[in-house]
Image (tube, rainbow, N blue to C red; front, side, top):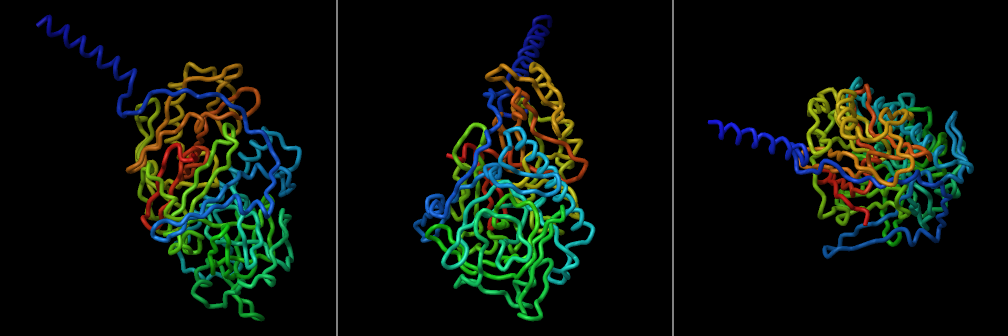
Amino acid sequence: MEGNAEKILLFSFFTIFFSSTVTSTSNYLQSQTLVLSSLPNPSTFSWTQSDSQTNINELTDSNGESSIFLDLHHVDNLVSITQNLDSLSLNETQTSESLFNLRLRRDSLRVKTLNSIIESAALNGSGARGSGAFSSSIISGLAQGSGEYFTRIGVGTPPKYVYMVLDTGSDVLWLQCAPCRNCYSQTDPIFEPLKSRSYSKVPCGSPICRRLESSGCSTKTHTCLYQVSYGDGSFTVGEFSTETLTFRGSKVGKVALGCGHDNEGLFVGAGGLMGLGRGTLSFPAQTGRQFNGKFSYCLVDRSTSSKPSSMVFGNAAVSRTARFTPLVTNPMLDTFYYVELLGISVGGARVPGIVPSLFKLDETGNGGVIIDSGTSVTRLTQPAYIRLRDAFRVGASGLKRGADFSLFDTCFDLSGMKEVKVPTVVLHFRGADMSLPATNYLIPVDSSGTFCFAFAGTMNKLSIIGNIQQQGFRVVYDLAGSRVGFAPRGCA
């Protein structure tokens, strides 16, 4: 009996020791090394019309189906452009720290806008499209009209190249058009539809005009009119039309877009916006036959890489190493990409109390989790965030704590260090786990060695997976298959 007791005690000791040094509920490591880096340096960005031929590539597979490859660039690269909107501004004297602070302020506005869209949809119901007058403006998913990533696209025939912001939180495509009653400053000449052979106005009452959430009709030309309003008062108003878009050698005809003659807001020099949402007017939805409803992007960590981010449309967008999670549908709103988050692990163990019910999308359209390219910092409902934060603090207890910074309440003073060990963080979606690199959740916030845990809590019911956490993954959107996938190390 005494020998058996010793064996039981010995077995218990090894069980506790093994579980505490490896994992307790998963196959993921407890910790990983973070090589410390600084904030990305501000750099002016030059992309001429002749460059357009080298920043876009086309591939045709064995079935004759084409895929388009685009370079994406972060909005901070346009620091040479001066734009002002109330207290927000970009100018030539921005430092890496001021750009980061500006990014966090944009982020806060965007999150506020996303929540207002969903709350409005939940309050008013899905409603009938095309029945709203201009006085009942839409609120788009793009906070203050400024997305985080842009590319260069040819518009019209012959093509005129303009910067276009790409955004998964919006549906309607639009660009500034002449004659311009009220336009903000952009880097390229404003598009002149009368000089394009492929430009065509959409007539009032046409099916595509009725898809707009807010549409009108010109009594003079019987042309469909559109209006998109943003959460901060920015807006674009003009004629709804169809036009040809050019991606190097590949042309996409009859794309419905807004030709804005009255536009106002902070759009950081871009000529317009390409909506990549789930709605029927988004670019992926309109080009479903040509690109099979598939696109993907991989966003690089700009503090460690000088190469551009990338986007792919078509079958080539689907990475072989991607793990997929099914999309969830919000019955009140079709724009956003909802997924099911089941839990989160820190240091190889599931965080107690972070359960699926905290992220549930209810029947009124509130709650849920969305993947968003235009939000930087992941927001989690407050109960989930507090549990995640506390678990990370325990795992990082060996690091010197620093002062809070902006929306971050868990920061560390890592000055004078080159690398540190940090607990791992894994997001568990239904059918797909997203094991984050350390650089995706412990990020530099100043030039003094302060690093912060790049998650934040929200008192709203909506949780958002932001682009900092998506860095380095090829994020695959498969509208036809109603799924989203994540492929690690996908930017190569």
